Length: 149
Image 1 (tube, rainbow, N blue to C red):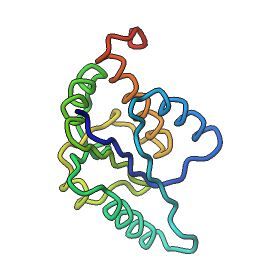
Image 2: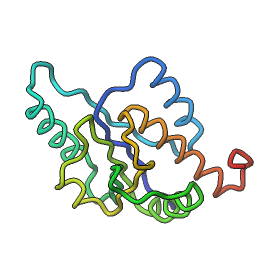
Image 3: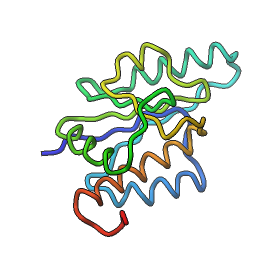
Image 4: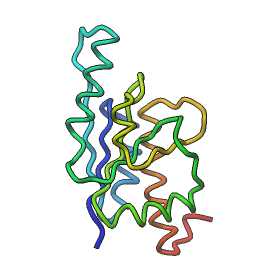
């Protein structure tokens, strides 16, 4: 039996971002839970970074297999991601996507896996779209669905 999949991320998805995310999320069974937040206005850059990382740490579900997305992580192909996701989802799995300042060392250290979508720096909202697409693709690979050609 598969556990629950949660995405904890900085930055609210709105407009086209939300439409694209929702399009993929509704195809995934069971659909992942998305927890996202914007930092309060008026914070200095340092305060914003502290707030974001505290919010992320506070919203990672207890007893989850934590997968942090960070450009220092390991790059994996879609096929390898599908294999890993299948194993991770035997329990509750939580993907963590930081904001513009990235993830602090404490969150990366707490993570059971650290993955990257290449060495480029991606906008955190786009990274979330790429992640949900890869989760959907992984499910298609596992089911032998032709989406993954």
